[in-house]
Image (cartoon, rainbow, N blue to C red; front, top):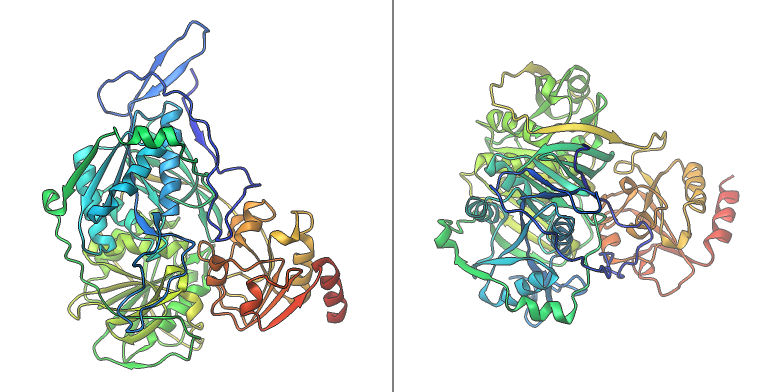
Length: 608
């Protein structure tokens, strides 16, 4: 008999989206729940044969969904005049869009008979109960409300979820890859690390079969596929599905569903968050970095590499480390054969030493394989920095969890050895965070905010010895990456991006043609990616790549907030759009109003 498989694919490419760029809920009919046999909670299949001769597969599988309440994505965040926070009094609060996708995925698994129960949980003040009822109305079987009035940082959230995992014993935990308020992108990775179970982040497709999950992930290089043993943690990306609409009868039914209320103390969790936010500010144009004088700082930078070549984001991460004047900077290269990457890293100015760990297990950048090695080697260092790419976002929260500290996400400025600035609310507010002076700093560095460190170094290369136990519950399956000889999108000095206004995949060739004339990389808006014009690794914006080219040409892009977040650090912005009222013109240095199919050929002709 064939192995039972449930395939939950990314939604249709031709989707409707709100102007903010998050998915518009789809009208999805909910089939009657499958009749399931209740046996031991271990993950296995029971087979029944209806009179028709067909075979139904039912799994005894419980899913826990983390479901955060955030300021609605349509609200424009404003910083309080005194810099003490953002204005949220009286604003609309809604479920985190990524968590809605997570809940929808869990419900689809249950509707297909792959799961028997979906439990939705939140950590929030007492007035968030209506938010949980929203999750129950979507279709969750029951809800858990962990009540607290304190603002919860990712490590505490992960520790709380771990207690719920121990209580509920789920086979799968699903949550959004990030919340749209703090944009931290840490909780799922930290939970998996504390739980000792595999993680699959940034999921755009999920298959369940034979006690395993096969997950397609949206990474910077393309679409990566992992196979993980269950139980596991999966974090969802935007293209996984479209959440369903909630109907009035479902709202009424939700009132009768179980909702359990707990306190943090009931779970034995203390909200001992260590970061102190000292200031909130509106975003301003980036200025030159300031060298901060601090002594005795020893920084370990984690190198990102692919196919034996160092990623440009590593050199930018080194620049951030160098902003702490007087610090000694080492670079760690983990690979099956680190020789070539180590030699390249050794040439970067300002690097004192290159540490290498050669291990066949490091052939693929699996976060939970690399993290134990990094945590062991981090002893004696004051800081551990990694790039804020999909590589770093997947890896660094695991390192932080193993070291028992919170992580600073998207570090964009250094004000002291333990004092940094980072963006929140899609870059519409900038906060200053202060890490306790006696605590190791684990951070991801926002590459768009830093230049590449110069060449000219001659660092010594030293092999490091690591005896950390490495998990085998996660396996690399493959990477689907488009071959191109164009510049890398994240490091290119020139970028030409196309939006939904281009009209089709066929029409997108005009974007590639102009890019070739300029020697530029090619990017796209989320709307263009969702429409199927180009693959997801070309997406620019809050949920795509954050870039800082010297020249950015936006063609047929309206300028949703989430897209503008990705180009805040660009030099000169040129916008081409037939709609003179498009938001893109508000931030463009040069604006051309007209038909792109008329303007682009004229530009190409002028370029020769």
